[in-house]
Image: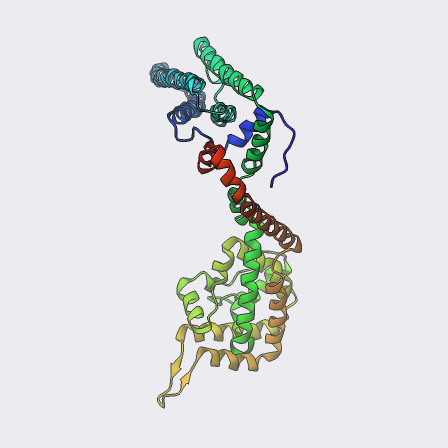
Length: 405
């Protein structure tokens, strides 16, 4: 359940109905949206025209091309007039519809004061959401139309509110409790937040590491080292790390063909896909820069040989001898792991830290809070189900508001 704040009742109602209300997809809502779109387009065009005028003024000073400026101004005037005509027509039609709707609600007998309160509040919220007020026009007649209509809507909200009985006020608070927090939207927002996404990536990294340790006695971790192309990228990373420059990341995970072969022979997914390129680069630099900076010259040679053998084995795949014996990629990796065991142990130790603690503790702490909040919101949804049934039965319009979110 949400905590109810003591705020202005009309403002509280408007804020609650901004995301979804009784007039969403209604012709009133569509009309107001079109007015807003014309207004935004006009503002954008005015900005462009201002920039063009400034550029043309500079050109006129240089070339004295006054005729061109007059022609452009006339064209802009025509466009502006067309927008003005369309907006005026929309304003009159839309605000006429609003006035008619207000009158229709007043004439309807089988409607509660609470529903009136929400219907008028929905119109006000729609105007607010699209930033429609007297400031959108300089025409006095249009300003008066907008002002009078908004005032009429606000007056009817107040009238409906003043007629509330004790039971109405009790029902209203119950409705507020289920509407003021859109649990589904909040869950989606929290679930897609950066900290939660990083927490999920952290789990996948740990699983990747545990799997890699079991492939060829940990020799599959060779793939964490950068790929060797025309030059020794491991030695290059040593140099970069000592200068505190960005490292060369293992590009074989970005190469779809090679990444697929690694998965085929080891079951290890592409780290680039698990993390995405930017996070992969950040993680690799933060977790392996010190490792490369402390790496000795002879060590770099051993790691280069490890990496070269690993990539070569992946490219060639499992090999079958003339006598039918199959040498698997994992066999080649394990053989080199034994040959360079001391250096492999160092790599495993570094990977232990990099994969098990990939991101700052604060990130995982925030993710834990977000997940706890998601859990609470799901409980709220469950606890509100019975309450919603009672509300829907007594005030069916609430169901429309929820479905329009």
